[in-house]
Image (cartoon, rainbow, N blue to C red; front, side, top):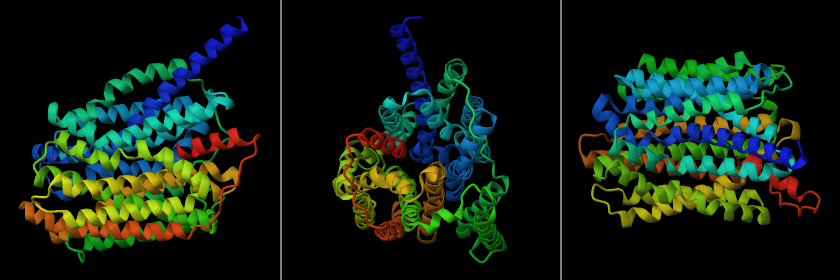
Length: 482
């Protein structure tokens, strides 16, 4: 084979890997928010209360978060392509099960299994892409991968709303099935098998984290229903707290824990991770309630609700490149902190204007401010995570930050729904708004605390890159942003 033919073959192989990993990442990222605009339709078809609807989102984010750091270790030990196809098959099968669910319990169970598949599949998409792409082209590849995932997050509410309105809510899950079935043989044929350095799977840490988080979230969800002094709620909080305490102790003492607690000795790492968890707590909880407010109170269709959310959820596609450039010039800390303060301002604005007859003109400034704030946070946050640890710990640090974001999302839905239930409900539009306002004020306060945590990150102005290191730095930034 000539050199030119070999280059063409290599290029075609890389293109296939980019397609497979980007589409798989799109599916996993999409299912974080795709359910939100379908919740009123799911409630209408399957019944259940607010606490049941919470689990249709939280069951996915919790299993995704807890197992995310184990996905890469599984691939390193048993084969990355093999585990990627296993995760993809589990995710695809669980999507079909969710679409066919006869009731909420079955839907919630299917969503939990979806999260397991996504947690195995998602971290391996980037590992497989890195192995296939020549070093000089990785910056472009990471950029495409990250853009596709960003499109999934931005389009989640709109895609979910459009499918729900024009076909049925089941199609937000059926959408994954043909994509998954198409990717499975392609992954087998086009991805090369590879193994890692024998990373250990932390079974004890996984069990402690998953049990502790489930106990806390379960108690927060059941609190408004069973009463905060009930045995089930108190038992969940106490048991969950003890298990999470055991997880922290395990991370301090174990030889190879899934989350080494020594990383949190770095003020930069602790600050950005606290900010990330609190940011997602406020953001996810707000989107969960606002998507329902736009439909059940304001009377918008699912598609209209998704479109009206775009100034918030879609803004990172426009602003993030500018935010990244700004962080290169003045450093990531002020950009992240400014973004979080803007996000808090947007939620507070929405709390002020929320009413049974609020116009979109009154809501739009809050959505735009929140979108700009979220964009300023996303661009430099991952770089700040990596800057706070040593180079050989960056893989663990990235996985920990992503997992804490998902945990924040699950906690946000539970906490803000509990505040909503304590003050309001679905009995009338005014009753819904009565619960929505204090929930949004809670979200604004939490994100404001996240901004304060970001200000605790040590100031570090970016050094001017030398000509020989510029490309490498750009590649690292693209990888961490993804």
